[in-house]
Structure formats: structure tokens, C-alpha cells
Image 1 (cartoon, helix red, strand yellow):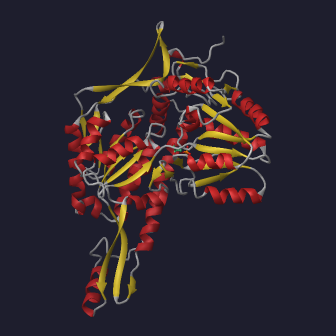
Image 2 (spheres, protein in one colour; image 1 turned 90 degrees about the horizontal axis):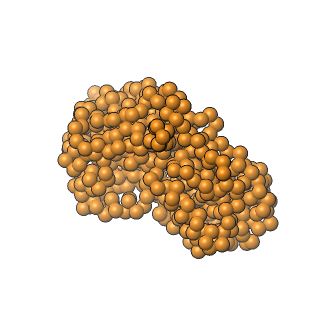
Image 3 (cartoon, helix red, strand yellow; image 1 turned 30 degrees about the vertical axis):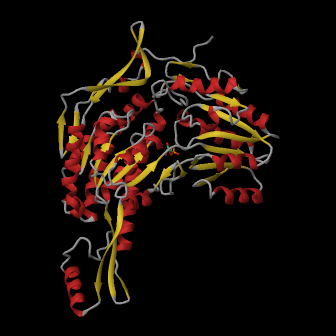
Length: 536
Ligand code: G3H
């Protein structure tokens, strides 16, 4: 049998990547200091195995395995920096915070290539997508700065109603715990961290279990750009560092992208759940529905990309495909042909699509899904589908899938594509209605009447209906959220700003004396809240 994947000799790896490992990170940022850790370390293993002598190796570094004491130090630092809203950061003008953020983004850009290399090493994301992840994050920061300016501009005027003069703004909620997912360890951590910071909150951030080292080059940028205690990092096992933080009751906002099981557990740990605000991005099982009159070239291209970009490890990935029975075989033939043209290899190989998977035992898990489906009557219908070697798994198209199979309901988060043939549109609709998830759906077809009917039904089941295209989060100015077990709160450049703030107002009875006081405050620009400044 031909070699499924070529795991390289170390000497075959490009020089810029070889130079980046091993990275044994001992630094962590707390209270404005980059401290050196001399305690226990967690080893970091890459999804990319490389030949070392006659054997394979994948150890690429290590990071601090911190405990409760360090987590509480980070919390104290963040709480002091917020100082119940009296800290320098929450009281700083928006323009002041924007200056800090511009400094940060300039420093972040200087580390672009290091971060890209570490993304490839740590999570096996291909070079192109790793570049997009960094550049998209930079754009997100710039767009967030623009959005907070817009928000501030609309808040810079007074309303006068029923004898009350008022100025309404949004004020920061307090100390935020930010945790992103392994599949977008930079972008989705920053998708909450940046809006939390710019609105005046202080932050503790814990990188995901996989995708930790890539944050190391950025620690200096945080230290140099923000007042002390505004950004603090914790590393280690969630139980050791996150549980005590939540149990303290001093976390005001939980910004977490991961599983609903972990999110529920964290929320329950907080002693005053009504005080805790949450912004959560959770699981999804986004379906594609291919109608008989769909343009099959479009549907196939979008479904392959939607199901298998970054090996299917996107929360927005298409995780189950319903195809009308009249076109199922044609669809499968084209779909499988397209998959066979995908390039498999290492993340840095030019034009590569399918790469090794970073999660421990992931290939065994995916194989178990496939074996379960096979034992219940499905087949792997694409050539070579489901073969695996170490961390690499060749995409498997399962057909026909039914409700008895694990692949029908479980979020595979990997390159397994369950396909179902349907006779009546009520079949995929019933699936969507009964699903625990409600993030997005894709519909492929051409008859406007039927499509509009479907859209009107689906918008009350999911939060984004994609017409003749795959599911996705971007453009990042659009709202990104989900129903049921898929999300809490909404992310987008502007919605995220709302998530970390609360509407607050100063209200003044319209008397002569009060008018004089307000006029003086405005004229002398005494207040950062009560003012009519227009940020340019
Ligand atoms: O993992 C979930 C991500 O939010 C998906 O984002 O659609 O841009 O890949 P994306």
C-alpha cells in the first residue's frame, strides 16, 4: 500500500521553522512584569512528527504549569488595575486607550512570522491559513478601534427629555477571563481580548491547551503597550488555574470559546452566577442542504471547502450534508473527485490542504466514528477515506448515514463527512429542529420561492443562513452567534464591544444650577464620561 503521508526528516523542514523550535517558554506576564517561571513545565508536542534517528519525535517545547497561587496573583493584578472602576485603565479616555492599542498592534505585526511559524508547528494549520489568522487578527484590531470610535461618537451627545438631561455611554464591566480555542488560538482569543481591553476592562488570559507557545512572542508587546495589571497571563491545567479563578467570584465576564460542557462547569463554579456575564462560542453541527436544482459545481466546491478547510476543525465547518435523492450519486461522485484533488502534507508545504491533527488521540476518535457508521450500514465512499497514520487522517465520506450512527449527532471536528440522502425537505428540517445546536446552515438551490421559504424557516432555527455558500464566521463585522448549545452572546467587531460593557448614564434635572455645573464640566473638559468630544 502506498505511503499515506510523508512525515519529514528534521533536515527536510524549512529553515525558518526549524529555527523556531524547541521553544521552552518560562516567561509569563503578571502585573506589568514578565516573570521567569522555575516550576513544573508542560511539554508541547506538535501534530507534525519528524524523523529523529530511526524513530519519530514531535516534542517542540514547553510552557509553565502554573497553579492556584499564580492564578490568584494574576487575578489580584487585574482587580487592582480595574480597582472597582477607579483604575487608570477603566478611567482612561477612549483616545488614550486607542493610543495603547495602536502601539500594541504595531508590536504584534513585528512578530507576524514567528506567530505564523508557531501556528504551523503547534496546531498544524497550513501556512496560508496561518497567515490569514494573523492578518485577520490585525484587521480585527484596527476595525475594533474604528468601531469604538463610532460608538463613542454616537454617545458624545446629550438627550433632553421630560426635564432630564442625560448622557448615555457604555462602561466596562470589570475583570474578564479570556480563553480561546485551539483551532484559532490567536484570532479567537483576541476576538474577545481586544474588545475587552479597549472598553476598559482588565484581563486574565489563558491560552488554549494547544496553541500556547505562539503567544510567547507577544508578551513583550502587552507589557510595553498597556498599564501594569491590565493584561495578565496564566498557563497550565484548567482545573488548577481556572477553577480557583471562577470560585473566587471575582471574575465579572467569562469570555470562552470551547465546549458547552466546560462552559457549563465554569459558570456553575462561580458563586454568584447572576453577576457573571458570559460570552461563549460553543459547539455546532452545521448542515448543508443540497436541493435538486442546485448548481452542483458550486455546491461541491463550497461543501468540500466548508467541510474540510483546516481539516474540518472549524466550529463553522459543514458537519453533515443532506442531498436530495435525485442528485445524490452525482453529488457524491463530484464531491469525492474534488476531495481526491486535495493536497495532503505538512503545514508548510505549498498549496497543502489536509494536514496532521493536533488533538491527542484524534485519529483514533475519528476512526471510531467511521467504524461505528460502518457497523450500522454506512460505507466510506471515497477512495482511501479513513486511512490514518499517527496524527494524520485522510478525509472519509460516510454514506448513507442515519440517526443510529454517532456521526449523525456528534460534532466530529475533523475530516469525516457524513452524507444523507433525502426525499422530502421535511427530513433535513426535522434534523435541524431536533439538533442541540443552532449556529448556521447552508442551502444550495436556485428556485427563489422555495429558497425564500426555507430561509424564513431556518432563520428561526440557526443564526446565519448561507445561500449557495459554505458556513463561516466572516466578514468579522457581521454578527457571529448561535442558538441552543452553540453560543451565548454575540461576537462581531461592534457586538463584542457591547458584551464587555454596560449602558451607564449620568442624568441631571434641567435646573439652572445643574445646567451651569454641566456647562462648566464640559467647558473645562473635567470628565472623561461627561463630555461631548468627538474622536477623529
Ligand atoms: O471555529 C470556529 C470559527 O469561529 C470559525 O471561523 O468561519 O472564520 O473559519 P471561520
